[in-house]
Image (cartoon, rainbow, N blue to C red; front, side, top):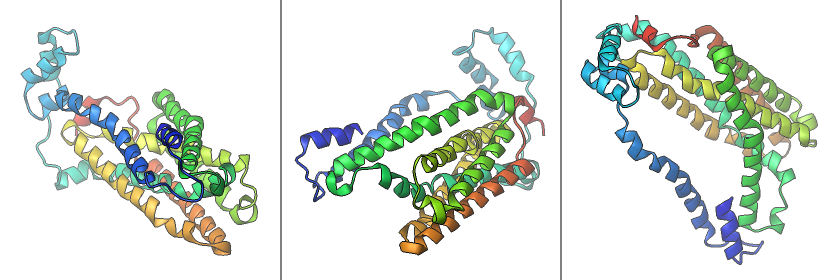
Amino acid sequence: MAVCAIFNGLSNATNDHTPEEADLVWRLILILGAIPAGLTYYWRIMMPETARYTALVEQNIRKAVKDMEKVFEIPMDQMIQDLKGLPSTQSYPLFSMQFLRHHGINLCACAMSWFLVDVVYYSSNLFQSHIYKRLLPDPREVNAYQEAYEVAKLQAIIAICSTIPGYWATVFLMDHVGRVKIQALGFFFMATCLLAIGLPYATYWNTHSGFGFIFLYGLTFCFSNFGPNTTTFIVPAELFPARFRSTSHGISGAVGKVGAIVGAVGFLWASDCKGDAKEMEMTASLVTLALVCILGMLLTLSFTPETMGRSLEENEKE
C-alpha cells in the first residue's frame, strides 16, 4: 500500500494506460517483502542446535550443556544429569522399513493434511475477482497505482478481520482443545462455508455478493487459521523424534507446497470461463474444494495423533 501510494503521488499516470514504471513497482514490493526474512538470516545461522538433538543425535552432552547455559540459569551438573536421563535413540535411518513402521502413517497424515489445506487456501483467487469487482472503483476511473492500492487495502481488511483472529484463537485454545480437534473443526467449517458459497452460487451469489458473501469468504480464512493452516505446521514439530523432526517437518511442508501449486494453478480454468459456463464451473470448483476439506477432516480424525500434553521425550520412546 505504501509503495503504491508513493508512486501514485510522484507519477502523472492517467486512467487510460499503465505507466512504464509500474513494472518496477511490483518488483519493488517483492523485494520489500524479502527484507524481513533476510534480516533474520544472520541470527538464524548463529542459533545453536537444540539440546535434545545435540545430546541424542550428535551424542555431545558437553556441547548441549554449554548451549543450554546461554539460556537457562541451571547448574551444569544438574543439566548433565537431566540430559543423561533422556532415552537413548534408535539407530535406523530415515528411509528404512523401521521408520515406515514407526512413523510412516504419522508422516503421511501430516503431509496429506498440509497438502489438502494448501489446495483450498491457495485457490482463493477464485473468489477475489467476484468480491472485489463490487467493492473497488471502476478500473476505467482510476490508474494502476490507485487500483493496486485499493486491492491491497481490501486484502488487509480481510486479514485483520478474519485471518489474524483465527490464528490467535488457535494460539490461545490449542492447549485446551487440542491440535486434532482444532484441525478437524477447521476443515469442517471451511467445507461448510465453501458449500454455502458454492451450492447457491449460480442462483443467488452471482447477483447478491454483498455483506453475506464477504462474511462467508472471510470465515473461510478464519477457520483456515483457526484450524489446519496453523496446526499442520505445529503437529509435525511435536510428533517425531529429534533426529527425524526437522526432516519430517520439511517433507510435510514440501508436500503442502505441492498442494499450493495445485490450488493456485489447477483451478484457474474455472476463473477463465465466461458467461453461464463460468457460473457452473465456479459451483463445481467450490463444491470440489469443500469435498477436499471433508477429506482433510476425515484424514485428521482417522490418522493424526494428538500431541497436546505430550512431552518431546515421549517421542524418543519407540
